[in-house]
Length: 301
Length: 301
Ligand SMILES: [Cu+2]
Ligand SMILES: [Fe+3]
Ligand SMILES: [Fe+3]
Image 1: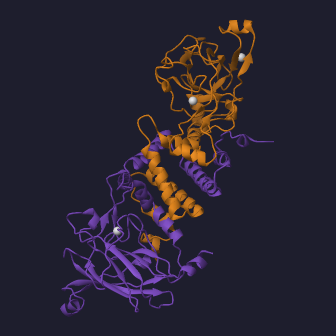
Image 2: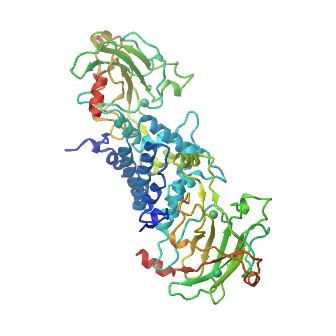
Image 3: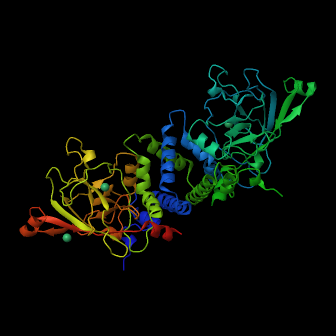
């Protein structure tokens, strides 16, 4: 005997099944699957929360305002995804690495394509502002062998927590950005300034939500890297300052334990001179391990 | 020994716990609870779907566009809630009735406050367009006793599926709307026209989604009611035409089995004259049962 939901009639108990059954003619199996999961989890959430009509309407308004504040340079829905940990989860799912390879984290909105390729050792700080920093390490494969001709695209905020693109006319173009290529030893090194933590935009609906949740909008100080080499999976990641006041509370959950670097203060004029800086400076050493393209396929299988 | 997520460091396995732990200082326990459920269900969904970065970005754009099409007369997020069955679920959760009471359904966007109070039997069709319909029934309590002085606020689309407010200047103001009050016998009756199915707005992101899901945007023909009486729970509901082509596939899942009426064709000049109409006409009889305010509290307890 057919029951109510086979006719498409709504019941509270079968609410998700009634909706999902309606999508049987979806244009693709993938869309059908995605909407089945979204519908089921959404109905589970509503049944667990039991929102009042007023709470439901406040959620409708929140979602509406989150869309309406978006424009060509502001993407509030990505921010929402970020502060709910969804961006990091999607990154993790799409970048599972074999054991021993460096972990990824989110790209963030401040990458600029076409940063200048610089000679190894160059100073990416173009305005001599902030505390000098020497960054170095190796690009290795999972057997610990150096990777030659790896491309290292690095970018960072300045000592006040701003990227060049946020301060056009104040910072020089391409300040604190550079592209480097490893030689046969797989080593990289360059000079910059110690970055500072910075807030994500918090003057919109997502910032209000963070405030209501008793959360701050800050990301702990970090350096961004995209490291690529032929035959290896491209690695998009950051390294973090473990002494940053927000290291345990990154607003977007980008910190992974394996990505904590050490920003070691060095007050030794001879050491400073050897790396082309004045003392005191910060020494940051960090090796990255790339997975082979085929290793990743094997891990996914 | 503290583990990574106590420090707030992200791991794929503990992703939801890491995020939820961050909300411990939320401004209210209710907000903390709501965000805990939303975060957990959202992460469960992402883990089950395993979206690609591109799929994630398409979802971001969909949510953004759904907000951006909203304006003072268009609320696309309510439409999204409607077509995912969420509006009906929230309605059901907030309007659980004791056994024997009439079921609710969603209010919809076309109710107008301040419709004229009319003498029982009035014709709410002001432009003589469409197939005449006689609607009648009783307002009862759960013991089957008539409720006197019940207020019946009724509104409907016309024979082309449009409400007056959608056709200002074409339909007269307050066409197919009226407010009636029962006498001691609890009976109501009025004249109108047989309503037609109509589409929800489908020229936006939600309409595109419906199309991709192989779904039409139509709502089967119905009459809207808000019925209120002192000492009883206000009932917001529809009654539906079971012969409508979309009765089993209401785009917003508003149909409940108990809300199927009968639109009985009558081709009898004498019967028609008795109700002030010309034959043929449709006869629609439907009784509503209101729950006492305290009965509802008992059901909820
Ligand atoms: Cu009848
Ligand atoms: Fe950054
Ligand atoms: Fe309607």
